[in-house]
Image (cartoon, rainbow, N blue to C red; front, side, top):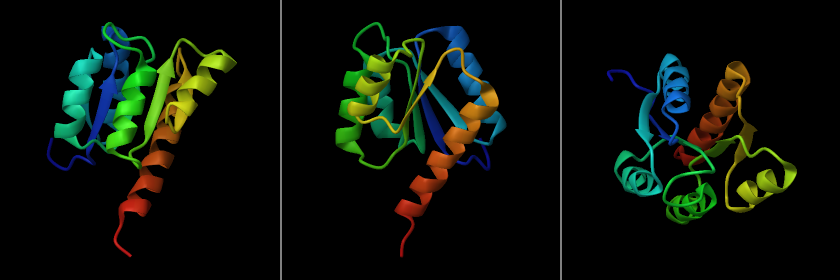
Amino acid sequence: MAGSRGDVLIVEDTPESAELFAILVEREGFQPVVCGTAAEALAAFGRARPVAVILDWTLPDAPGTEVCRQMRSLDQVVPIIFASGRDDEASVARGLDAGADDYVGKPIRGGEFIARLEAHVKRTAALRAPP
């Protein structure tokens, strides 16, 4: 997409949720890269060099927490935001402990989600900017 603000990796195995996230990020000028499995996500993570990751907890081939750990080992700065129906306190804590920067419960509130995404992307851009 011409003029894209960068790729946002959407790791979500439910097509309806993946489509919602894709629409939301595309409206903000990002290019959505949708993956339905952990294996696809980890392969795309290295290729896409995303400006952010939206990560579901429950994937068909691995838990989101493991995907988060692996991504975090490759990039300490990229924003990783869990978006999951598992929004109890213990799950949120486990997601953050795995290396996520944020955690939102489903169903998401679109405006709040975009505000969180924007805040993380801006913070990361500032960290990566040359002095």
